[in-house]
Structure formats: C-alpha cells, structure tokens
Length: 94
Image 1 (cartoon, rainbow, N blue to C red):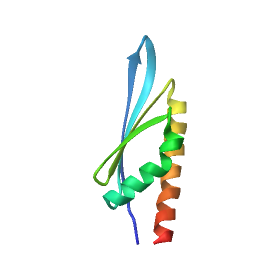
Image 2 (cartoon, rainbow, N blue to C red; image 1 turned 60 degrees about the vertical axis):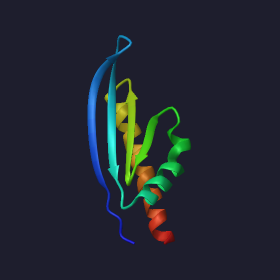
Image 3 (tube, one colour; image 1 turned 30 degrees about the vertical axis):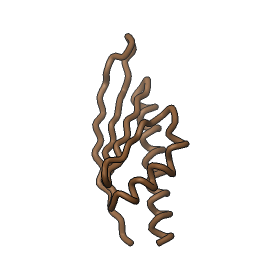
Image 4 (cartoon, rainbow, N blue to C red; image 1 turned 45 degrees about the vertical axis):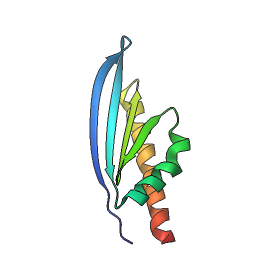
C-alpha cells in the first residue's frame, strides 16, 4: 500500500480573554476513511489538552492554540511526526 497525504494549514492570531493566541487548523487528507479513523484514534490520548480533532470522511481536521508561535510550531511538529509514524505503521502492517 502506498499512501499520500495532503496537508492544509491555516495559522491565525486572535485575542482571547485579553491575551494574544496563535491558532492553527490542520486539514489532513488521508488515503481513505478507515486510515483517518485509525490514525485519529491512535493519537487521541496524546492530543488531550493540546489538539482538538475530528474526522470527516478521509480527512482529519485538527485545531490547536498556543500562547506563542513557537509553542504552536512545536505542537504541530509533534502531531505531524506522530501521524507520520502511525501511517508508516499501518502501511507496513498491511
């Protein structure tokens, strides 16, 4: 199985409760709905308190916020690395 993902990223800054926050929405297109569901479930324990996710078909929608852009980048980097590992695991097990 060969898998390709498509990634869309929206980063914005908003004032929430008188503090500036960096927000990011990720749209991750995976090969199929089963893969998206399996990856989302595999990562949900790691995401608690950091990233809110939902699956729509073969797309994982993830939203996160941080006090500064560097923290946001680190959270996104970690999340994408975990998706990469989960996807490789699925590919190698099939």
